[in-house]
Image (cartoon, rainbow, N blue to C red):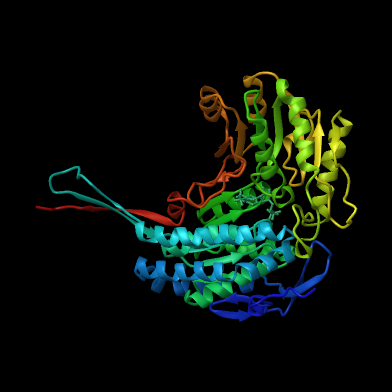
Amino acid sequence: MSLELKNPELLRDRAYINGQWTTAGSGKTFEVTNPANGEHLVSVPDMDDTDTRIAIEAAEAAWPAWRSTPAKERANILKKWFNLLMENQEDLARLMTAEQGKPLAESRGEVGYGASFIEWFAEEAKRAYGDVIPGHGKDKRIVVIKQPVGVVAAITPWNFPIAMITRKVAPALAAGCPVVIKPAEDTPLSALAITALAEQAGVPAGLVNVITCSKPNAVAVGGELTGNPIVRKVSFTGSTPVGKLLMRQASDTVKKVSLELGGNAPFIVFDDADLDAAVAGLMASKYRNTGQTCVCANRVYVQSGVYDAFVEKLKAAVSKMVVGAGLEGETHQGPLINQAALDKVKRHIADATAKGAKVALGGQAHALGGTFFEPTILTGATQDMLIASEETFGPVAPLFRFETEEDAIAMANDSEFGLSAYFYSTNIHRVWHVAEALESGMIGVNEGIISTEVAPFGGVKESGLGREGSHYGLDEYMELKYLCLGGMR
Ligand SMILES: NC(=O)c1ccc[n+]([C@@H]2O[C@H](COP(=O)([O-])OP(=O)(O)OC[C@H]3O[C@@H](n4cnc5c(N)ncnc54)[C@H](O)[C@@H]3O)[C@@H](O)[C@H]2O)c1
Ligand SMILES: O=C[C@H](O)CS(=O)(=O)O
């Protein structure tokens, strides 16, 4: 399939190290395919730890000049990069839908969302403020300054192939740090395309490096990124098991670590909720990216008094969804990323129905075949089902019935995850009580889409460490240094 790019230069088949578009030292490559039809898109370098070491050393060499570049100059380069992403939004969206499968409208949205982090941190670059603290002695003067942490390793997932990268690279560059990026093997093309635009924007050689590799080589590449002492910061977005592994590996050299991990978001509808708003919010939260987002509603708790009415309203909305290949027309849902993702969806539905749940809508592989699946609603879900304790990462909404506010909070908090949570209520007293009681890093109140560059994104418990975006996001790439000036008159 022709991708019909206005700027064919954005389709890259080389990785990027030290300002050079390069092959793997081994000469090996791996295929990138379209999940909607299995078609081969392009082959990219299958790099290993040796290539990674070269990239890390290039980043280290480029760091001194970048860290001494005035913040305003760093900001201007970031602003050029932002403008280039927006000027190439359609091409970047087409590339993303081709390699990841999300609807084209969602891909366009992600390009804008990803670019917003570059725009935001172009401004934050100029606000890395320190402190002057009243001295503890007559002759003492105390100053606190912020300095870039150093070489950053960024390892990112396939579900948001641009935004998960810019959410790390933008603050790193703004803080004065060079970055070595390892994108997901399913979606390297978006990473390479935005890197080509970074090069065009004037990001100096060595500052941004992209290591593409297959899944088997990820272990060796990750081992180098987490083990090489030159790397001072690891920023990972992906599953909790891999995050734990990388955290363990990074501990040998005591690297700073940011982890954006798995979720299991509760979505609670109280009997005083605006049901139409709650249905709209659930549609946006649950089925976005075919349910493959870390902040998707994963468990839907509905208070008894409104349960039946909510089920009917949700069925009416979900039944209007159009499923299809995103490059063949406007759709609401694309394919799942791969067979393993499809198998997990089927496993969760089979387990739930075996334990008493009913399929109210969908529940089957889609007639389109491949990894397409029908948007699904289950009723009669209970806490003992896999779908309650595991992240489904697919287009399945399991509805649980509850009686009291305390029951809902207890069930919502009954998880090792705590990334996002949502609830709908028009009672202000209940809003404050429930928001304070839920164990989650982010909460949508009467809102199903909460992700934005201006607010701190991140989780508690086993959903991660640290925050991305907002003014908090810059500090993840900075070190505090305390100066004590003695002998002052
Ligand atoms: N909290 C967030 O912001 C956020 C955002 C997106 C996705 N996620 C989570 O990510 C998961 C889905 O993404 P995924 O399937 O790509 O996750 P994943 O953990 O399998 O892979 C994420 C990245 O880690 C790499 N990787 C895997 N094993 C590695 C290893 N041993 N060493 C080095 N790198 C390794 C992969 O190649 C990929 O680039 C879900 O759990 C989702 O909730 C979280
Ligand atoms: O999947 C995880 C992403 O962080 C989702 S969002 O685009 O930031 O909402």
